[in-house]
Image (cartoon, rainbow over the protein chains, first blue to last red):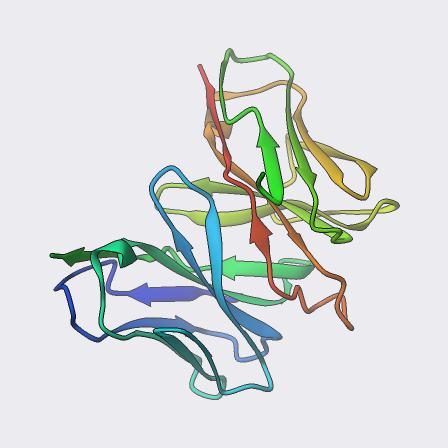
Length: 115
Length: 117
């Protein structure tokens, strides 16, 4: 059974710091991994999608890496800003729970960036 | 306007009532999904549809049903709501990819908060 873990559950940093959010998964048979951002009371916003054949993806100040063999992904945020404060979720895609195209989500890391 | 729109955004109902949550999208995607989010449990897949004629159960489909009225519309129904169906419900879409196991990038709606008393 695929399980996705995100550590830490919460993180508070001063503005301007570079930071890394971690995601680990137990089954390396994944088709893709996606990072999302969720603001309070809002939906999920897709940040980066990494296909299983890729090692990393970049978008602006965000960089996500994927190491399938070790079951890990990291989301690197450069020069953090108060507007980055949100909960960050990672999800892995594959054939899970008898469902094609199912995403298994971690519980998220709640990030607070203090001015 | 949002690409993925959910209605209602908030709903309070009583045990035993029938509830429908609606989702419409303007992204032109064939694939649509319904997830629920519970504190401490994360998001879990309820139903998904790869096209208008293809509907499939997810991990937690018991107590729910869906209807894919058109490519752009996917509704979730609770025939007889119960308190443990209180949750935040999300609709999502993605493009068709080369394999059914690869979801591609998912795009989510703003969510529908349902409270069952």
